[in-house]
Length: 401
Image 1 (tube, rainbow, N blue to C red):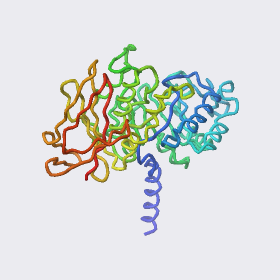
Image 2 (image 1 turned 90 degrees about the vertical axis):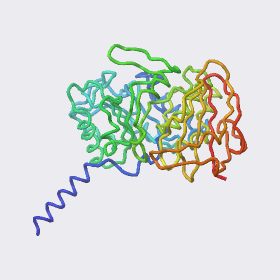
Image 3 (image 1 turned 60 degrees about the vertical axis):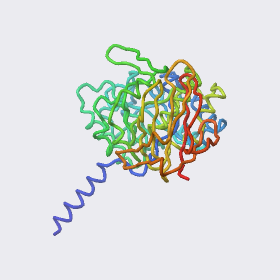
Image 4 (image 1 turned 180 degrees about the horizontal axis):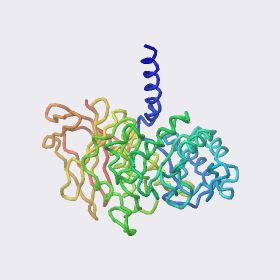
C-alpha cells in the first residue's frame, strides 16, 4: 500500500510539472511588442514611455495590459554563472526595475527568448538553460514570455516548447507562454497543453496583401497571413489561441486598411498585440486601437474564432459567434474603389457548423450595431445598405431582439 501511495505521489508530482499554467489568457492577450517598429533598437526610456502612453491614450482602460520586450534586451554573453543579463547600456537599471515600473502602472511585463542556442538577433538563447532562465524570469516578476525558434538545429519543436513550459511551471510564477515557431510544425495540433498562444505564420509586414521574400522565408501582409492557414479555427479557444502575429496598425498602411486589419484580428480571436510607436501615434490610429466595441468582439468569452462566410464581388464577409446568441459580422471591401452593399438578410441565413450555432433570419430578428461608428443601424427586417471605402470595413454586432 505504501508503495502505491509513493507511486501515486510521484505521478502527481510529474503531472504538476507537465502542464502549463491554467487560468491565464482565457481571452486573447492584449498588449504591445517592440519588434515591428524597433527590432533590437530598444531601451529603458522607450519602454517606460510606451507604458506611460498606455495610460495617457486610454489603452489600459481599453483592456491592453502586456508590454513585451522582444529580441535585443540582453547582453551578448551570459554572466559567469550562466545567467542572462540586461544590456547595461540599453537597460542600465536592469529588468527587475523595469518590471517594477510597468507594474506600478497597473500593467504587466513581458520578455523574449528563443529555443535555440542564439536568438534571431544573435543574443544568447535558452537552449540548455531553460530552467535557469525560467527561474530568472520569475525573480524579475515577468508575466509573459514570447519564445522564438531561431538557431534550433535539429531540435524537436514540441519537445523544446514542453521543456520551457515545464521550466516555467517549476519556477512557480504564472507566466503566459507565447509559442513562436511560425507555424512550421503545426503547433495548433499539439500546443494546447503547452502554451497559451502559438504563431501560425512567419513575420507580418505592413502591407495589405503582399509577400516579401528573405531567402528561405517570407514576410507576409495582412491578407496573405489570413489566407495562409485553413481549418485551424477548431483549435482555438479560451487559454489557447491561434496567433496571427503582432499588428501593423499605425505602421504605414492607410487608416482604412488599419481598421480592416484590426477588425480581422478581432474576428480571428488572435492576440491583439500592438506593434507601432505609441509615442507618435496619430489620433486615427489610437481611435482604431482603443475601440472598445471592436475589442469586445476579440475578448468575447465564448472564445470562438471567426470564419469566412463569403468572398464574392470584391467583398469578404466574415462571421463570429458571440455569447448570448449574438454575432459579429464584417464586410471588407477588397477593391481599390468605394463599393456599395445591399445585403438581404432573408436570403442569407447562416450558421457555424463547428460550434452548432444557427440563425434563421426568417424567424429571428436581430438589432444591428455599427462598431466603428458607434451607432445603431436598425435591424434585420430590412436590407443592410452601406457604402464602404477601398480596403475599409463595416463591422457590425447583431443582437437577438
